[in-house]
Image (cartoon, rainbow, N blue to C red; front, side, top):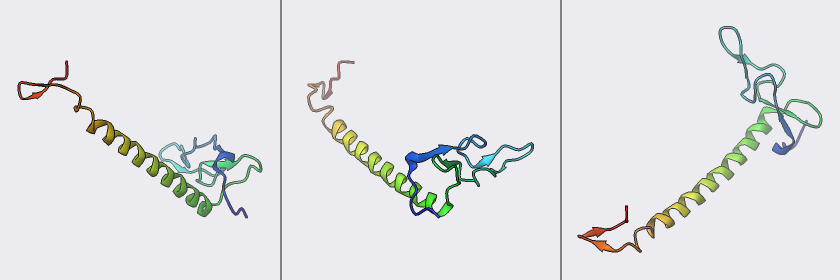
Length: 97
């Protein structure tokens, strides 16, 4: 049993294209080769345990949330100073449009 999952050493499942659901005639079903995970271990070719994969996905999601918060903060700083340097004209700001 694996103790950690390294997302850099995972390969997409060719049967389900990383969705975990294999296309069927009338409806989708759980992909058998990857056991519904959508990924394989590149080195061994084994499926990844669902519990370990969920923990790793939560870590990736946390990193993405921090990145989004950083970009939002950067955007707020840029928007705050955007109209500061524009000259007033007729009671408003002239943007040279």
